Length: 329
Image (cartoon, rainbow, N blue to C red; front, side):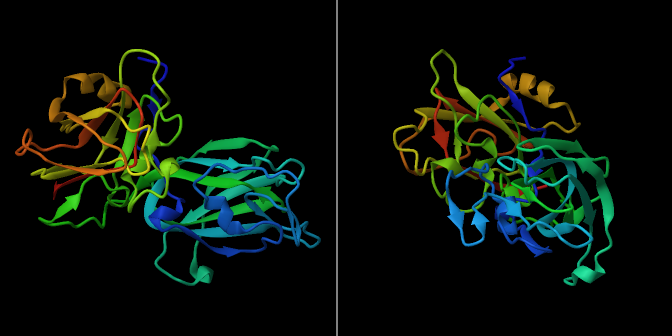
């Protein structure tokens, strides 16, 4: 297996705002807004930039605590889900990072934070300056709220909560829906390259904001092509397919093709990637144009069930959104 393959195992960041997640409470964010902690873009450092309270920092930063206790914030997830892996990122916080952190979660329909009953996901862990702290969690429960504790104070650039959306409330009936929607539970499981833009972006709702809000690979200097494999919600009666290259004007792929399969039993991501070479074609190689939504009718697999799709782009480049419409099963 190529070392270049990026395996995401179908995990998405549940804290990202485009799912509807938001910070609903913080004890203090004197130096830097708590809302920045869920910004989907990597944290940046702006040399010499100060605001009225001090050095501008791209993250959440509380003032130096002069009383007992510790600071914390609460995030309400836009969609309930389970959390497998957490990244507490202190990028650019050097000397002003917390001494320790911990993470708690709960499932609640209450709008009153006093009613929330917390379960520990990550016990107290030491933090280092300017570092990504990756933690695995063992809980398989779904959560609606997450509480990040910092001890006693300080700054955290980003919080990423990688997991899976709960599909318990997905009752589509016989409706035709976008099977590749991030909001419906679709996810990317692997891709060969995402140098300029993450593969997951193509499943996001709405029109891409810019090139960075799509999937873009590096310029290929050898033979071959780039690809990604996504796990849409299971579907059948596939009808319309949309491939958008909005904002990609001098760097869109020349062509693309789609392959698909229905794999009833759970398999590892490497085995799915290996088998994808033999999947049936959902869309034979077609030409793409710059800055355009391309619409295609499915004629090759009209009666097939699918739960995996491989997008091949030739030879490289970027696409901003992918949508495929069918009946959820």
